[in-house]
Figure (cartoon, rainbow, N blue to C red):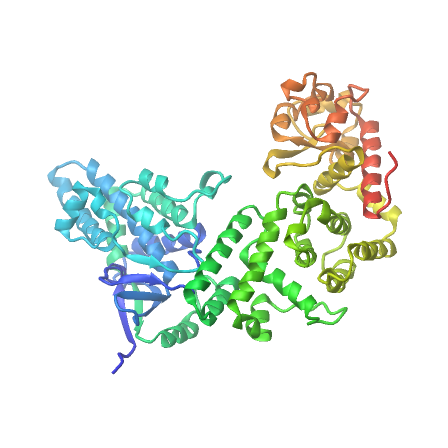
Length: 602
């Protein structure tokens, strides 16, 4: 007869001290706890220990499916269990450090013995090692390698070896060397959640003196508790999870939908081979703020709703992504491989266009543009997705979203959302040519907005996004190459907006304080400039900013941006009120003509 459900109240130390291996099933989410989650856990432990209470502290319920021999499938509790292990590893390293510097005196003997006992308990958990094996490991750390405590089989986890790499490291520095680092990220942002959380615990432990450290570790291992509920039927375990789970991090749309797709897949191994690269590509693009996996699901929903005419013209109500796939159109999930191929195609398109300068420009604007750009690009054969081929649709969206940027509207206004929802039927339809789409945008913009009103709004614009658009249009008009590296470009104030000599610069330019405040942030006083140039000249007089030698790269003369380069030959060495007014008028007219699709006269 099958075993019944087995609930048991256990301390953290007993719960983690298993002979079977913890396992995170394929359908589970990736490790998602961040520093704030760990801070909350830490504060709860600290507050409990500080109370010196007799009653144990309760960390909630963990549900385990025991239907696989030798494994404990974590149905609910994978985030906490992983975090407990990271905390224990941080405690392990800190205790070793403390023991190595404690004096061999009678006064310290009792505390050293207690800390050693805690270390023995942690070794038994992390390395399945009794005292004898612990001594062997300490002599030869290679014997700590390959001990399985937790296997992560989640199809959503990109960094399955992070926990293992941290636990197998002998020191903190070895752990830091072993873990994954995101390219182009700085400081702690370059690390995964695994290492960031581990590092946070390790650093917190350094504020504890030996005796307090002993109390903290003992309290965590022997006084903090969970209820472990074991089930020998996976369906029963998942039902309990759905009934009991009211805490922890909410599941994302991708977590839910990937679990459904995995359950529907006839060949689970084949599905994993398809899904894991999708998650990896989405993670890479997400790091660049292009698109993440939840956005992929949303974008396909928009494409499919328009293709299948699942809403009426003028209808703006959009179902939630989760509801769309699991309630309204669950038939989509019946073909996991086919659906994943469509998700993959969306990711390939974004991967192709992400470095196009016009894409980088559009990414500065309201992100809703992505929903309608992908609708159009999804209909195009992938080999035809070239910058020159897609620039016309990108510029249509640039024109509309520039109006959103400069005007006093929200995206939900009928001027934007209603038009785009209706236009999406045409964007997805390959029978509807780009010329007709451009005509639709022209008609909508010219019939909805007054050019003089828009011009007046742009002349008063004081933010930064249209500075990029102004440079783009200027470059196009003058035959210059337009491109930029997002984290290597600055918006430069020609008349400095701040600095220790700002009052002198302002007075030299013949401007009152009131005039300066009104004009310093206008488009006519802003240009794009390389970061390395801007950091040398940002606070200088205009004459200095113009530059003298190209090879110095310390002035506008050394810039590859068209407007900055033109300013290097400006006939005056002073930049004041009239100069800003003239430049502002030109920029406003340039952008306004672009929005209304009227060629600019050079």
